[in-house]
Amino acid sequence: MTDSGFRLKGSVVTTVLLEIQTFSLDGIVFHLKEKIDQVPHFFNQAPIIIDISKMKRGITVDEFEALIQSVSALGLGVIGWRCDPDNLPVWSASVTIPLLPASKARPINIAPTVKEESSPDVVVKTVVEERLVPQSTKVITKPIRSGQQVYAEGDLIVLTQVSAGAEVLADGNIHVYGALRGRALAGVKGDVEARIFCKSMEAELVSIAGNFMLSDALQNIVWKDSAQVLLVDDSLEIVPL
Amino acid sequence: MNLSGDIALAKIIVVTSGKGGVGKTTSSAAIGTGIALKGHKTVIIDFDVGLRNLDLIMGCERRVVYDFVNVINKEATLSQALIKDKRTKNLFILPASQTRDKDALTIEGVQEVLEELAKEFEYIICDSPAGIEKGAQMALYFADAAIVVTNPEVSSVRDSDRILGILQSKSKRAEESKAPIEEHLLLTRYHPGRVASGEMLSVSDVEDILAIPLLGVIPESEAVLKASNQGTPVILDTESEAGLAYMDAVDRLMGEERPLRFLEIQKKGFIKRLLGG
Image (cartoon, rainbow over all chains, first blue to last red; front, side):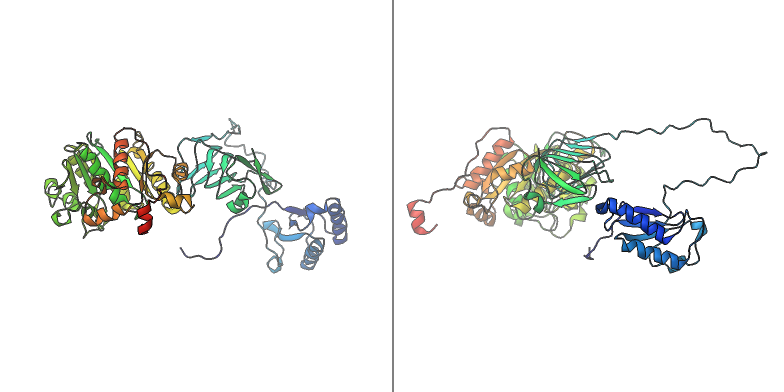
C-alpha cells in the first residue's frame, strides 16, 4: 500500500443552525450578539450553518453575503448554508460557502390534500410499535491474539487478555478482565457515554466515540494497572479503578 | 474418500512459530526423535516445500528420492518416500520437495497422506514453514496439538501470538467447533545472562504475554549448531544442556512432570575463565 500521507474519514460534528425567518441584518446581528454574550464559550468559533429555507421573502446575494460577514465577525465559523431545494435562489452557485443538503430532521411537507371524493385504497390496520431493542452483550473467553479483530454491537466482555496487535470494537462498553495490550475502541457508532474498563492498562490505543489516546500518553497516566476510560467534555479521561 | 472423517488415533503435532529462524526444524527433529526414543512410532513431515531443511538436520539428505509432494501427486507411494532414521528406532522422515512451492500442497492431498500415515504411526510431527500463509496453514490445519516455538524477544513473541490466533480460528478443529488444539510454548535460544541484563525477555514475561502452558525452555547452546551441521538431532547429545532440555520437554509432552532447569546464569569455573570461554 502506498503511503498517501492522509486518510479520508467520515465525521459528525454538532453545529449551530441559524434559521432565518425574516431578514433584517441589524436585528439579526443585535439579537445574535445578545445570545453569544450569555454563553461566549459555547459560541466561540462554533461551526454554524445559515438556513434560509424558512424565509417567506427572498433574499439577494448581497444581503446574504453581508449576513455571512456579520455572523463571522461575531466569532462564529460559517461552514455552509441551507435552502429549500425547490426554491433555490438564482445566485445559489455564486456563494462562497458550500450549500448543504437539507436536514433530515426538518418537518416533512404534508402531501397535497387528496380530493374529497377519492377514498383511500388501503386502510392502515396495524401500527408497528417502535421499541428499543437492547443489543446483546458479546462475551469472549479466549485470548484475542495479535491480528484478530472482535466487534460487538452492544457491550463487549473479554474474560482474558487482548494481545498487542489485536483490536476490539464495540458500539457500547468494553470490559477486559485481563491485560489490554492491543487497541480498544468503544462507542464506535458515536455513543459518548461508552466506557472502557480493563484490569491492566497496556493498550496501544483507546478510543471512545472517535476520541482516542495512544500508549505514549497512557503511560503517563495509568500503566499496567486497572483503569477505566471515559469521555468528559470531548476529552478522554483515564481513571484508575 | 471421506473428507470429513477423523484421522484415526495418531496424534498430529504441529511445530510452528510464525517467525523464521527461531528453531522450528531443530525442535521438530529433537522432539520427534525424543518421542521415538520413548518407543512410539513417529514420523516427522517437512512442510517447508521449496526450502527443505529437515533432511539436513536429520542427516538423511543423501537418501531423499521421493518427497511429500510426489506422494500427494501420486507419483510415489508413501513407503517409497518415507526415510527410516538410521540412528533411532521407530522414527521416519517424510521430506519436502526442494523444487516445488507451497501451492503444491492441497488440503485434500495433505489429508490423504495424513490418513495413511495415521494407520501406521502413533505420532505425526508437522514441521511448519515460517510465516502465516498457505504453507503454515496447511501444516497446522489437521493438528491436535501445537508446539509454538518462540525466542525470548518481542518480534518472535508477537508472531507467536499471531499464529496462536490462527490455530484457534483456521484449523480443522476450529472450523468444526471441536475441542481446540492443545497449545504448548517452547522457548528456545534462551540466554539467562542476557535476560538478567535486560536484553532478552524472561520466561515469565513471555508466559505472561502468550498465556499458554510452558512445555520447555531450551538454552542457547553451541551444541545446537554443532548438531545441525553434523545432521544429528541435538536431543541425542546427552552431554549438552540443549539436548537435556529437549528431553525434559518430550517428557512433559508425554504427561510427566519435570522441573525447569538451565534458567540460571552459570558461574564460569576457573579454567573456563582462564581460557576465556
